[in-house]
Image (cartoon, rainbow, N blue to C red):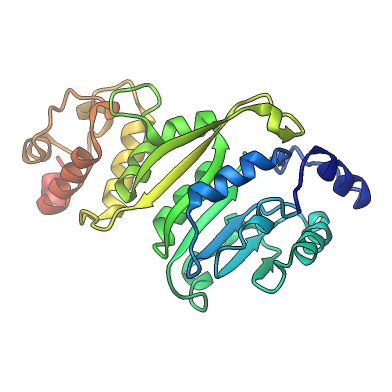
Length: 281
């Protein structure tokens, strides 16, 4: 079943669906984009796929090469259309449909009975893409690879290099956990409704080896440091990191947060932890 512009319009009319702006809904109407995503996902017969924002199944029905699919959709008005699509394409048996808000899911509990390694393949709703991806990186190590369609601005933040204007907390957090790259550009015209922004295909590959660090300390330093982005770290982190801490980490206290690499943040957090409370000042 190929879902193009006419098929999308037919599904929307038949099920009285009006795309929700508040839910960030933009449905793909170009089958070539769907095929490209599936090809880049490189699915095999043993792969388990997590899809968030399944909509009415335009992407879901093309994931037939996977062993199983968990399709999460928050909008209850889309569920009948999703079930219909999966039934017509023979994907219903291998697809578990969940009517859930992905932002409310506790991923450790979610994967208790869904064992093994997973890939995520999704056209993510614009309004949740960044916090959702960070939540999955933090709490779902079972998801080893993510291939997602997101707003271009979001994608550029995740892949931003140190020192650039886009480099910030999402960049550091995501790059700590994974290798990230933009592997495709997606124009607005392939969606309905047509958004005012461009999209990209973003690929995350979870790192096999993760540098050990106290994440609570590192995330706190990131939050405070970027809370005053234009200030030197010696001022923005005053009370958290002193001269001893900067020296131990091998960092210039006159640096600003966007000047620090992921490894620099790791070194700074480690220096703070090693120094204990006496080393904060």
